Image (cartoon, rainbow, N blue to C red; front, side, top):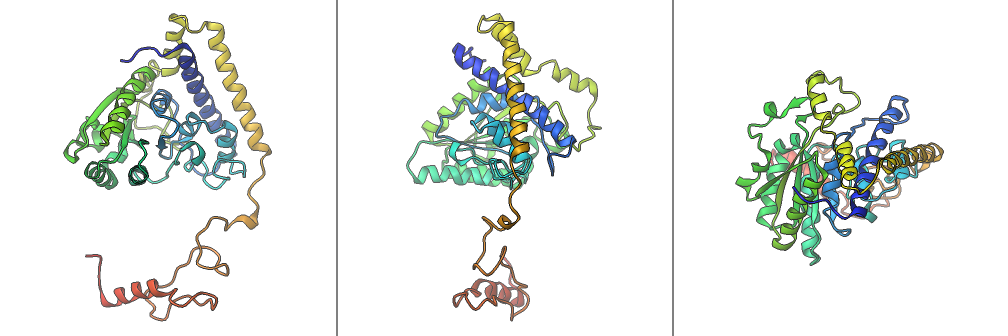
Length: 368
């Protein structure tokens, strides 16, 4: 257990956790009103894990998240207006309305995004850390993922390479007790998740993800060791999500009593009460913090509502193409020997790779 930070820092932690909570609650309401499309994964209950870990980073460090990433964007400083606009699919969203809930991104704040594929962010985190080494910087990458992702192939592959190449990355598994609707004990043979990297050369640590002070203390030590030793670490943050896996989750896999037991450890009231006991704030200021968070979220919703949708003619913006005349991604039927680019403006040899693939398929070659 760490110690209480300076009063200004402690107040900022409470303000940010409260903002994330109120933002997530409103996002759920907006989803129910069909203002938000696609899927919506809320981090209600995990605010201490988000804030405690992010505040262990320097401004120049990198943070990469999962599809449950609204709070990570907010904690890195992305304005709630831009996060809400992204949920609404509007041009003023942090991903210009193209990412939605699962693909937040803010390069200017070194928040390297949320990712819809379970475990898909792990190898990307290793690549970011490798880039830091190439550039000769001491930047650290914090990669967060859920307990379910620790069973993915990318987990073992990435931790192995990170240890082998001594990459400066902290892997933080957010153990919220369930991989979607499957309890930890039913999806992982090793339930002590901090130990899952040991055989790969990545030692582990654990923090109480329901306690922002403990989370911050453990992550500060992990980040310090990774920055100084240039070796990866795995941190297990033990926490709980109070809502379902997504808004479409009927939550039939857990009891109301279990949720109530974890709600009794709600990290926001617990930390607020501690600040009142320690004289950092009084009850009036505590209520003001909550009211200010609600006002900021109200403003974010109004901003998102006023922001326009992307123009139809921008559909192909930022989409990889081989030539201006080709709209969208380029593909061919590789089993057809005559397949290839038909655009005369394309330079000679453009079809080299598709033809190679075709030849390989015809010859029955495989990746071995």
